[in-house]
Image 1: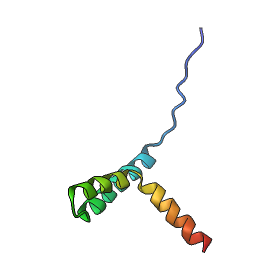
Image 2: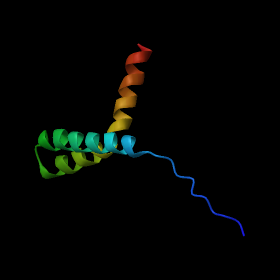
Image 3: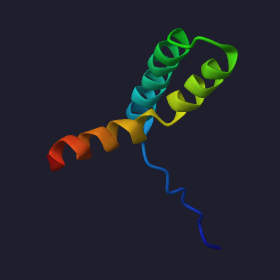
Image 4: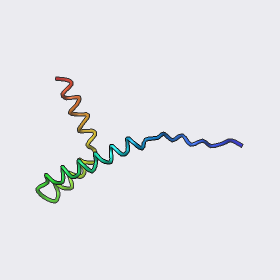
Length: 63
């Protein structure tokens, strides 16, 4: 009989940081929205905020 070991890693702190960032980005983008659809777009941007952060970091490092 073979034992099945779960190969989970502890990603709690990273998930918490992402969650707080998601909430903060959503408040920022939705607060700056001027219409309903820009609010929806703001929420979608809030989901992918790390991509914007990395893009801007790489852009500033390349200069």
